[in-house]
Length: 336
Ligand SMILES: [Zn+2]
Ligand SMILES: [Zn+2]
Image (cartoon, rainbow, N blue to C red; front, top):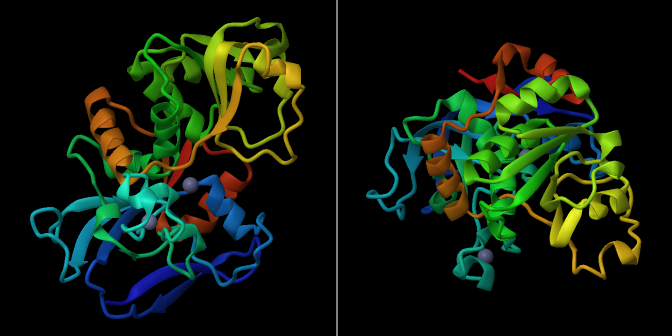
């Protein structure tokens, strides 16, 4: 097998084709021939070196869907077979012996195989090798690959936030930011049964927000006057917000869950949190069991990313499209 990848040699640089022969397949490993990959903000962080790690050459991508082409000798053939359509997301393996793995929280494993931190092993490529078959996610027939790929990072991040923080169908929730994560969060929370408010700086996203499932739409400058109304706020924007204004919209015991990365440390008036037992929380991509639940939930409720699909020879154009904030609402590369 020859892997044909799209490698970036320097920060914000273009991709170039790059081929390599992978090592022999380990007993728990799985090779997947990719057909589609989403482009996530974290990929932009890697390509444009927002993290300051200067880890080049780099192959980005961690929302891959394709077909299993090889399985290691210890992979249970009842569970995963060659030819199966599967996804590989942000985490492609973990140790399966630490306390987090043994309690089903493999996304917290200190030895997890973070695709974004691999050397040249992302999904902007013809193939990806998963470090452990238990992190390979079967894709239900009802989901199309281009629309399902973004569920593997963006989708499972918001779904895991809802699961981990105990959002109930009776809750009134807000989603801040209608982008890659936000447009999936609106669909998921609507199907979950919540009353959903979309909050955006862009008033022109109101119609789309309603189509994705929002009951109510607020522009960001209306938040300070919104009053106490939400049980849960999911902030997807990755920017500094007027945090006290947002806490003021939470009902007692409400949670503000931040899944984007703000530019600055949080500055929050203590009285925004203390008197009514409110909390600031976060979430990351879910463990494999939660991502599998999301796939089943998405198939049942017709949840899918609004994908803009770019052929593989336009990968740099697709990356620029995301870099400039023009994706409506998730850019996906067709790798075939
Ligand atoms: Zn991601
Ligand atoms: Zn572990």
